[in-house]
Every structure is written in C-alpha cells, then in structure tokens.
Length: 198
Image 1 (cartoon, helix red, strand yellow):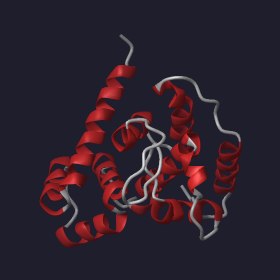
Image 2 (cartoon, rainbow, N blue to C red):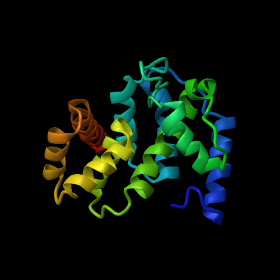
Image 3 (tube, rainbow, N blue to C red):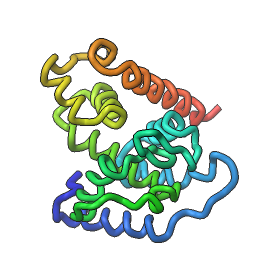
Image 4 (cartoon, one colour):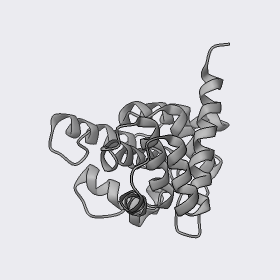
C-alpha cells in the first residue's frame, strides 16, 4: 500500500478519502450508527472490521466526545500533532495536522484513525511477516508510539510468537500498552464471534 507514492492506487485512495471527509455518512441512533463508516474504512485500508471496532471500543467506548489528557480526540483517540499529522502528510503531502473540528466528526475520526493504524500495519511494521505478531506490534505502536515499539524490537529482538510478543510488552513496555493490546484483541474475538451466523 503506497500511501505516500504517486501510483494510481494511491491517487484513487486520496480521492476516496477526500470524498469521505466531505460527504460523511449520516448518523443513526446507537452504536450501530458507525457500522457503515467502519466497514467502508476496513475495505479502504485493508484491515479487519473487528479490529477497528475494538480499537474504537477500547479507546473511547464509542463516545464521540472522548478527550484524553494527552490531547487525543474522538472515537479512535487521534492525537492531531502526532499520528494525525503523520497520516495527513502521507495522504495529502501536506505537513500539517488535521483540525480538531475534523477529528470531532466521528466518521472523519474513524477514517483518519484507521488510516493511521493501517499505515503502522501495512508500512511501518511491514517487515514482520507473521500477521498475528504484526497486528500486536501495530496496536502497541498505536497506543505507545511506533518509534518506541520499533526501538523495543531493535533492542530485544523480534519475537517468534504472539506469546513472546506479549511477554516482551509485559516486561519492557508500559503496563497500559500490554493491557491495551490484549484488550483490543480480546474484544476483536468477541466481535468476530458475534458476526458468525448462528
């Protein structure tokens, strides 16, 4: 996925992103009001629906007004001047942060947060071949910062299993990050089971 390249696919994604930012999905009542945005972004950024739902649940409990002391905004708790700025630069070739007003819109927040998570999974940590380990690493990066996670892997080596990855997080990352990764993955399993036909 060439988010920052000039390929036809990258240009098409920019057009789709602009369209989604300009013409957001209408709101419905309840948590299901975001289902359409989540599903569209799952397809656009090639991530499982359940992972996006789980990140939203763990980050904000689907509260669009959620704010953190560190400045994270909205459903996916996007920090405008770090992850938000990085993904904006990759998508639009502009070195600026998305506005707080834009991030307060739930559908734009889902798009930007999912694009950032996809960037971590598909590009930043793309050399990790095992998809299960890579999603753990991407989630840890989403929570703790990708540079910190990359430094952790450089210092202690890449794990060969998800169990080893979890032990690495427990031992050397903040407890909040280790808990975050497990909570998101556990919630994703629950969402996945809920989607299976009866």
